[in-house]
Image (cartoon, rainbow, N blue to C red; front, top):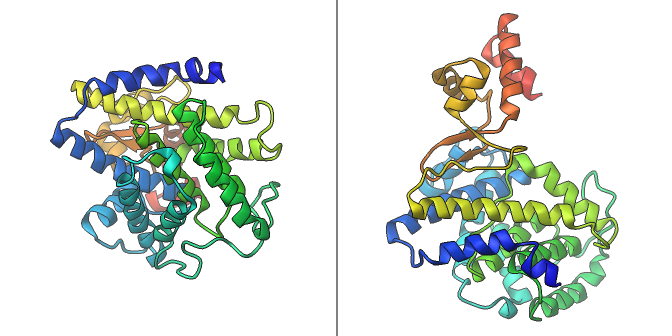
Length: 337
């Protein structure tokens, strides 16, 4: 495991060391980052599971306690519950990873499903389950309790691997056991982030746009029981997510522009950059975004709306349909169907 500990995550270790030099963080700066991550983690984790609340709507529900017209009660509860579960998780970060128990995992799950499925909230599943569209075979429900005891024993054994890999592995093992009827992914991501924060790392955000890559990477490993290098794609996704969060913190503490830099394959664009690439004005991009034709991939702590390069193709399609005299409502139906 020497390679995994000292080389594979060397860049993350270096950035974390840089961040540690700024600790303790300025109170107002920490509060700003904490509030931003609370909304972003809630929005993205729920979006991965199919929740249709937008980022802005999630913020209204979580921060203001408001309801959003046209959205279900369950979607509202998923937002408030996740935020509450994250608050509980943050209260645990002064503990050690080796102190985590099954009871802690059940507590996270209980909060996640409170008011949505009280019968199953905080309880292991008693029925067989399948992952929709996946060939992965999940453990028999009769084995879940014993598998979770083994899982607890693994957590409580000091691991000779990098903290980011410990967190990622904890997530992978939990979703592979799939101990609950629902809420496995959200619980696993919260547990992963609790472990990251215990080690002094910021939480990892699995972006909505990375949903398929994330799900496919998990399935790839699960189909061969995690053997060989089957987890490599999954580890890369988690590492990149941690890297982005470290960058956000480092830019904030250095007082730099918090535009999230990414590798060339997934670089996000500010509204002006996107407008320039497609030959449109900023106001037009804002109008199409407000109308639901374009999706904002991220909003930085300073409020910058960031778009993925996929929106370039979306805009070209919008312009094509406008030339055919489609209304905005007709365009929306056409491009989102």
